[in-house]
Image 1: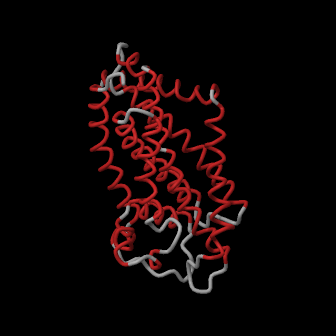
Image 2: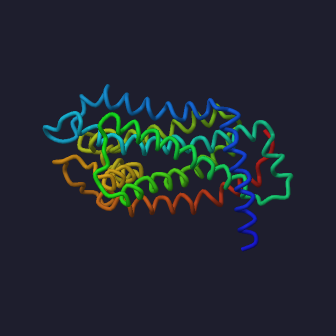
Image 3: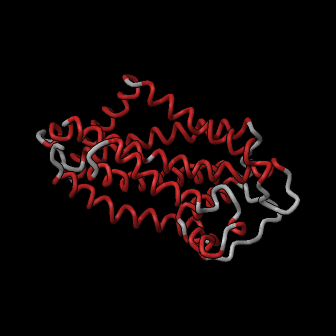
Length: 271
């Protein structure tokens, strides 16, 4: 318990350092706020009229269908802050300074991943407000809505450990940006985030049905009450039980990437 409390305390100090960086580099916060607004407006008004989520449904229905997918995409993209921040600290030698201090080895990673939940929380809040302005609405109870937002942030936290591991492997911020987009774009776009699965070819539809981004999006839609009227019932088990399937993926990611990220941090040297 003493080691755990020490790790959490040291992690809180590192998290505070990362949050203070927002005040010193306000451009980070600007991009965090502008990106979700741009995505909501782009998909709602540019692509929304061309996508049918249910037979005979008006364009307004797509906007409700869209917001859960945009939220899922945003928190996954937000997890890249972890990898980029660690890669930047590695490049500047700050990680070497941390490793020389009498602090828990896991503190840097715990602090980095925890502080990035704040970035994601801000993004989700701004996107939700933007969604309300374009016609989105939560049609369930306060508790269900809170569970939806909580599931988004929990998945983002787990995925940030994936990006933490990548950030400790790559030599620069530019590399992790390119590497993350190569992974994030397929898993977010080959899913039910923006289009109904029935519109996808059979092989891609199968992949999308078992894609954790699809289950996260489906879970959030159900918790917000945004399932389009007349939409077909899902046939794949992950989309029939999206909350359970998403939680399974969160546990798998944490079990795998928390220990290997900490191990990689111990091996990391100045590049």
